[in-house]
Every structure is written in C-alpha cells, then in structure tokens.
Amino acid sequence: MYKIGEALVGKGNEVAHIDIMVGDKEGIVGQAFANSLSQLSAGHTPLLSVIRPNLPCKPYTVVVPKVTINDMEDVTKIFGPAQAGVAKAVADAVEEGIIPRDKVDDWVIICSVFIHPEAEDFRKIYQYNYGATKLALKRALGDYPNLDKIMFDKDRATHPIMGFKVPRLPKWNAPYLQIALDNPDLEYIKRVIKELPQSDKIILEAGTPLIKKYGVKVIAELRDVAKSSFMIADLKTLDVGQVEVDMSFDEGADAVVASGLATNEVLDKFIYEAKRLGIYAFIDTMNVDNPLVKLKALKNLPDVVILHRAIDSEKTQEHKWSQIGKIKKEFPNLYVAVAGGIDPSTAPLALKEGADIIIVGRYITQSKDVERSTREFIRLVGGDIDLKRVHVE
Image 1: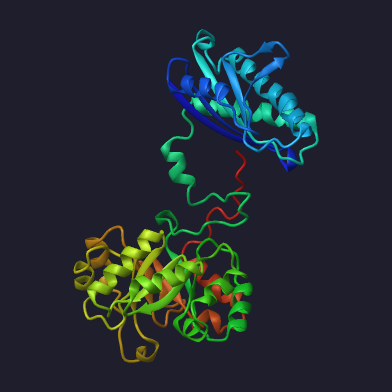
Image 2: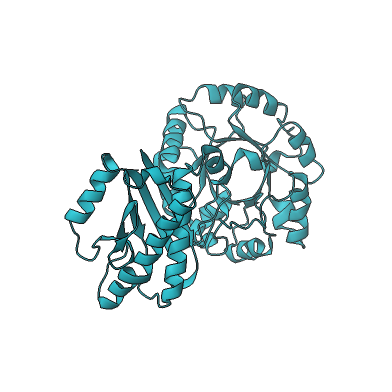
C-alpha cells in the first residue's frame, strides 16, 4: 500500500503546507521511513511526531522539515507546535476512522512540513499543521483528487503564490474573442488594454505592425499591463520558423502565428518548436487557396487555423466561413479562427458556422468606448465563466 496526500491550510507566515506518504512498513514507504531516520541531512533533520514527549502517535510518523532549520528558534517551531499538530492529527484520524485501527502497526507515515522562518504564533502553527495533516491523510486514503477533478480545474485554477493565471484556451470555454492590437503606437495600445473589461473570453494579439515596429520585446511590455492574458505574437512567419518561435517564447508569448504561405518544411518546424515549448501554434491562411489541403500536407497540425480576409481586400473578397465546418469535420480537435472586418453583425454568422475564435481589431481598438465595444462581442461568445469563482479547498 502506497498513498500520497497534500494539503494547504491557513494564511500568513504560519500557513501550513503538508505533503504525506502513507504505506506499509515492509514496502517502499517503510524503506523511505527508515532511511529518513538513519540518513540525516543538515538543516532538515527528520523527527518522530509525538503528542507529548515519550508518546509518539501511531502509525509512526516522521516529520521532515521542508525549510532549512538555521537556529534554535526554528528548532522550537518544529520540535513543538508543528510536531505536536501532526501527531495529534494522526491520532485523531485513527479515532475518526480515517486510518483503520487494524493498520496502525502495519503502516508508517512520512510527513513533509513547511514552517516559514518568520512564523511566530505557536497556536496557529499547531492549528494549521493539525488541520493540513488531517486533510492530507483524508485525501491520501481517499485517492483525492480523481482525474475528472484535475481535468475540470487545470485551466480554471490560479496558484495563489504566483499571483497570475496561466492562460490557456480550453475547449470548454470556447468560443473566444481575440483582439488584434495592430496600431503601431505602443502607448495607445497599452491604454486600450487597460480599458478592456475583465473576461476569461478575451485573447490579446500583438499584431504584425506592432511587432514590426518594436520587435518581439513588445510582448513583454504588454505583459506589464496584462499579466494574466493569453498573448499571441502575430509574426506571420514565412521562414526560420524555429528561431522566431524561440524569440517570442523568450518574451512571454503564449502563442505564435505563422503564415500559411510558408513552405510545409517551415511550418512543420514552426509547429514542432511551439509544441516543444508548450505554447500554441497558429497558422494564418490569408491568400491560401485551399486551407484544408494545406493542413493535410503538414506532418503535425497547428493548434489553431485562421481563415483570414486581408484588410485591403475586405471590399472585394468574400469570407471563407463555409470552410469552417469542412475543417472541423476533418480535424475535430483543431480550433478555427476567423478574421477580417469582423463586427457585431457578422460575428454571429461565423459563430453559427462553428468558429472557435473571432478576431476583431479596429471595431474595438479604434472605438471611442473600448469597454462597450468589447462587451458587444463578449455577449456573442457566451459571456464569462468562473470569473468570480473562489477556490476554497
């Protein structure tokens, strides 16, 4: 038997973060347990958890400090409220039936404990570590979380210490509104971003004119005003795809765009490098006669294909929205985006055909009321999901 559990409880410097392994004495957890007590590490000395001196809990539990113990003040926090909190939690878990009574002499527990060097309140250290240990045990023995829980939360959750959300484009949240920031005036673009409403439907695109003027470093500058936004570098790459992907990735891009007019060899390298780095690959099929044929010729598919009508051709060229269904039928996992003179009257037509992303530029960025213009499209793509969701576990 080998179970793993984790829990974070509390706040401030006294916050408790517990990682637990529970297993048989005769198994790999038992071996790790014996090694921890016989192979000591300076500053991270393991100790048996005791309810009081001379009274260890059962199953026997070893406490391993995660943070280096530098002085006797740190020692008292571990060899005191943390040690006692863990031991009491294990004993209560047995009493409450979380741990079967007939296993207390067969199992051992390894408990890694985080104690902040500036933690001061012993009562809170005890309470938080008690609560986190019991919760971690309950989770470990209940095999929490299941895969459905992980899949549900992986693109919704925000890690509290990071301070920003890792932006992704989950299928469950489509369709999206992509705002093309094409105006090559950086300060103007920053003002536009600040006026945008908060929405988990919005994607930001550093447009080609903006990148041509300032280089890919403009992505990092836009990050200063949009830390949690999904950021695309519209490179329209035609050559040296791998190099341009690397440059954009280093500046913080979540996605990169290549031109569908590039050779298949260039696009294959472009897509491979983007996927290797964990960012999205977009292919813009502006002026590509048959996007479906182009996609079928590639070794690896991009994440998104853009059906794009050029600004200078909006009056003479029809949209290729009829191809949306054909592409999605052939490649169900591919996102299809549409661009080129999109406004609130034409966007519903693209969405009805199955577009996953509508790309809007001037209607929003040149609007006298950026927020109002943006909300017109947010309503069309289904509103917001989980913006006010509070993660309380």
